[in-house]
Image 1 (cartoon, rainbow, N blue to C red):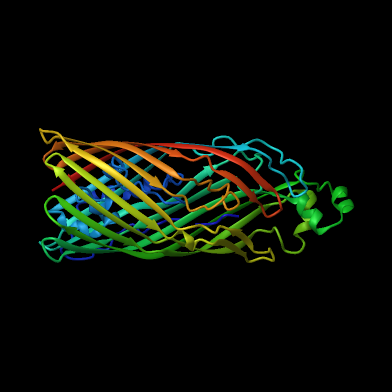
Image 2 (image 1 turned 90 degrees about the vertical axis):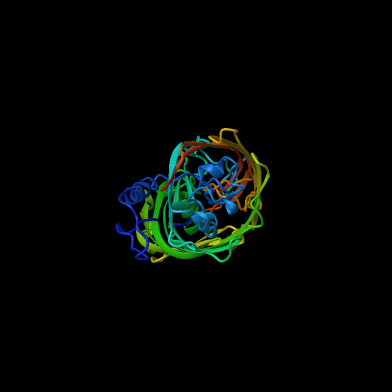
Length: 465
């Protein structure tokens, strides 16, 4: 069973310095955003990463994220850039995701070579909404403070309960909620450094069916199983695993203004280790109760350890003409940390081990910005290529049928007032048609292909004061 973990936080934010003041409307926005964050989306970056941390940056495929000095997402992407903010800055954004993903069976079979029964599972993802919120405040001419709340990792999908791959996955709901206070220091007029602390709360709910007919044949004689009506695909049970965890990490960055036209940025986000304490709830058909006598398939606690990956982002922006700016970035993510997911049950249930064997990945992006003559509008577009960490069909999980992504994006900024900007963006993600050929714990093999695509619409407000 694929496992990762939950989220929750205190109702009060500790004041980190007497010089940091958080207006009432910021606190309201903070907790409003927290409540909305519970509506997590399917993973939209490689693996289970969520890139959508800025609508402005979405418009240029996040190609300018490490050098972004115009909205509060710098808290997440590169805290060193906070040194460029004068006064205070509030950024609040929301995204509507309209994904599509469907499985098409080829030759899925059980351990005995018989075709797996059931449907193809339908569209396993649904439209959803995800927000994020950032606050940046200049403390002195050289020191700035920021805080952000967002979801850096998530996955949400659900198949029909009778589908062919039900023994490997039905429901998968994973979300990581991140709280990120940060500080930046302007070392010189050109060079700035920044660092942040991350508190991450993960939650998960994972379900799948259990083929007790096949399990019986591995434990008892065929005659005994047939006498109990325990035959393959004819005696399904169910398991639900709910868990959560709190982990800690850090991020830091460097921002360097080569000239008024050229900026460079480098940032690093650390890995975060989670130890998920879960409750495993089993539903066992009446004729399979005898298989629980060894203290297996009974409700129990469980524990899974997982390390979410660190990443490094490099970027630059270049204003080639007064109204034209180019941006580019590259991001490396340490997905090879995820080799397997092992669930240790507190009952006599054998450990559940899911081989992952993910690879490290690169993401490359390029963007163009154009500022109109009246300085009221800015239009942008971008393209990105995002590698999948999943190396082959045998390692691809029905819980996460990930594939390479190709981002094509467009966006705008409108100066509503001198200190208020509105950003809008649209992105279409073209995905490869990934194959799956994965063996389950009862020997069933899910074999087929997925058809996938994603549309994203975002809206954001920046308020400087």
